[in-house]
Image (cartoon, rainbow, N blue to C red; front, side, top):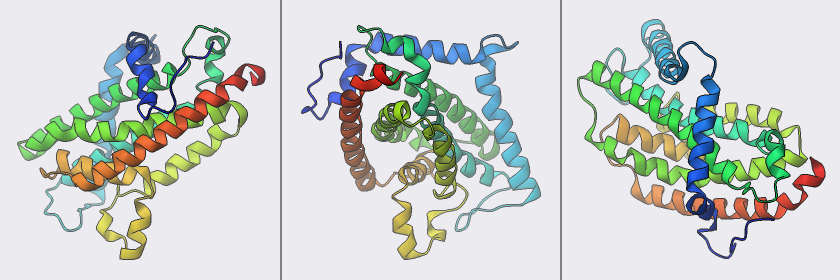
Length: 274
């Protein structure tokens, strides 16, 4: 039995989260705990991993390359803070996008259970990725406090930026999860695409470094606006571009709705292929 959702409702992509929130939390929690099960220090790795990566970025870019962010006054370690703010967003997106193509394939047992709401799986891996984003952001703010002696007051707006990103994220998961059932090579292609998206977003450089006409094309990358907005509130202590963020959210909602509709239509063939 396929869960009945009114696809004419623009909020239908969020109905699975409302109906099955307890199940979403349970699966997300199991996913996080399962990732570190059997390791000596367990969940502590979720804090150590971003801490180690931040230390490496700081050493390579600040100590070896002496990198500075063009157009901003930067201290010795400021570049690492700026870089890490963008890399966290990329890591958040890549974790979901790289896992999505095999999401249904790895949960074939759920496909064959007629009472299980498959649409909750997308929200669950998104919840797992949100946990890792939260941990990485805490590490970033702690390092920023150590380096700069303070953190921006605008950090309270970071959840708003993440909320604007969620429709694009969950839409990507549903689209890739459904396509991955029929196109088994998709997982390999997504790895290349997410790497390309990292370098085609203003993660390692400011958007102003891109020539005027090419700069507009950069905004076709779904990471671009969120990376810029995240830096605004986490690093630069300034308001994000609200007009751009609202437009981004609106486009993301349309994308999430279209992906959810496709997922609901295509899931009828999952059992036959698997």
